[in-house]
Amino acid sequence: MCDLGGVLHDHGAGEDEYVLDTPFVREIVAGVRGCINGAAGPEEACAAASPLFDRLMRERAWLPPEFLEPSWDSGMGGGIGQWLIFRSGARDLCLFSLVVPPGAMTPIHDHLAWGLIGLYRGNQDEEIYRPGEGTIDLARRRPLEPGDFYALLPPRDDVHRVRTTSAEASVSIHLLANDTGCVLRHTYDEVTGEASPFRSGYVNAICEDTAA
Image (cartoon, rainbow, N blue to C red):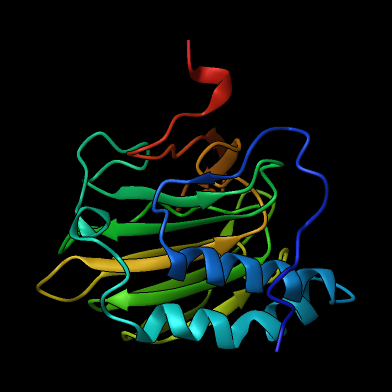
């Protein structure tokens, strides 16, 4: 079991931000930090944190209804809502929900961070891509059901697209080692593989460099 008292490192960049500030979320974050501190690298950290992440998938009452709603002001478009739950002061760890309405799909995109992603509600198809010079290839497609989760370890499988296949919106939980909504990452043209910078943002939190 990971050390529940773990910290990532000095948070001189700012204070931790708990948008959803509950004992359950704080317990999970503390445990994940202990896993990261005790791990030799990202793969080991993801493996160690998996039992804690599984609790996020299995517990049904910890996430309030507003974190399960689509948003039409999303940086991803299509009503996709990205709801921040927690981010560290150093912006090297975040936890958020991603809500994709029925019939909608994300653009092909990357994350630029390692971590864990799982499906909390609804059903999805995930498509994993391999961008190349002037091309982009579909490497793998898999269906996801509630409770399924996987480790994200860039550059392996970092570029993907998900679409909701259920009659209700799909909700995925992301625990990633950056401030995903605020970093400048990429979408990819599905024909040419051309990368374009984008920022997804959060529905319920701002990015410091765009606050003005």
